[in-house]
Image 1 (cartoon, helix red, strand yellow):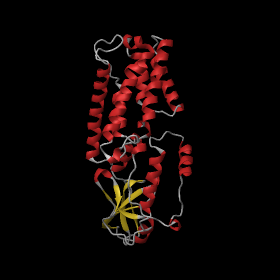
Image 2 (tube, rainbow, N blue to C red; image 1 turned 60 degrees about the vertical axis):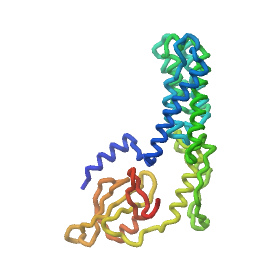
Image 3 (cartoon, helix red, strand yellow; image 1 turned 45 degrees about the vertical axis):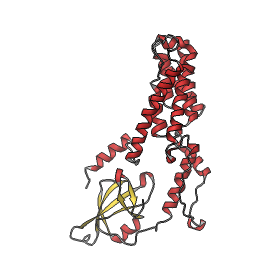
Length: 326
């Protein structure tokens, strides 16, 4: 028997719609930061060039790609793609590539595509992947005669000025919130750690293990090594405070198998007993999250207890949390 949520879960997986666990306050802080950041970019550029520059007598240039950079540095301030080197080098090298492509192959339909493709390759090799850099490279090609007339001055005005302004705004604004310090190097999360004896840890993962796993993944991960290892350590400390299996399985409650990734699953035990017959003494359960979502089955209380790692409840934002945890 399948639930109607099964196809919805499959669709969400295909679209990669992740649960957003940030608070409403954090969302508003990000939005206000982006608003102020773009305002700073415009005002600083206009202050530096009150009469415009080059053939732009009408005023200062504000790169459209700064809007995308604002999303990263204010909404994801600790992401790898948001860090200063990524922002500075990603924009400047992409601008250089864009200008070079336009000067070498002017008025060609494919010049913009070439500029973006080369910019992505350059950012990869220089370890400065910053998605808005692709827009900066493209703007150098499709920006029109006024942008073309700037030549390599495009790197300074407006690119370097815009980049400096957005970084100043990001550092200043995020400094107002201890948990959002930017760049990520300034951020030190203060957590009360629970000391755990080494004998309690069956497998103690290391920094080297993380580097090896990321290498096998062979895909760019938008999180710094420091934050990734910190996240794992906190998760391990959280896991080590719990028993391996719940003492009792009770109808009407939800239990997780405690696995990771695609193997993770949550079952809700029904208060309705199984149908009459050999299965009458077994408990009915429905898979409400993770692997097998929508499936319905039945098992004995002991079988469910051995399968379950701990009891969970659905928190705000669609996040499943261990019973009794924050």
